[in-house]
Image 1 (cartoon, rainbow, N blue to C red):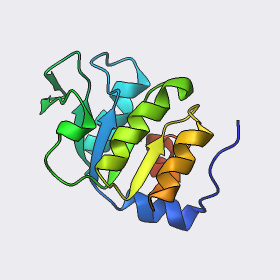
Image 2 (cartoon, one colour):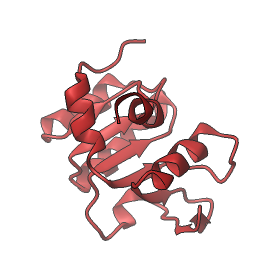
Image 3 (cartoon, rainbow, N blue to C red):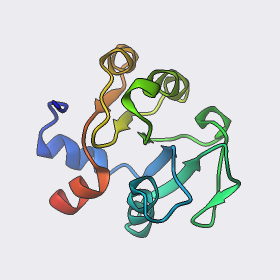
Length: 136
């Protein structure tokens, strides 16, 4: 699978943004959708979980939808299968984040193009944890 064309400097700049909403964050500590955002939280990121099946993850209030979050978000990190990403990206665009990050293994050209047309940077098929460990 291809990935976006951001260079290391651009990824470092993105990783300097600290307000991150995580769509599809999991309660299950063995899943990447849990341990990746937990790692980010442990490393200075302000994580806001988005998962309609629970009220709290890693001690933080969990939201049903990204559009329910009142505060400004820099990065919306998405842990959903590629074929399910489009409606989540459409909701994410309403929050006007600087970046939509599709985790490793996730790529949806239609959703990515929609975000770019709104002036939002798109990172896809990359892991925030791996990129943070590699570059920061």
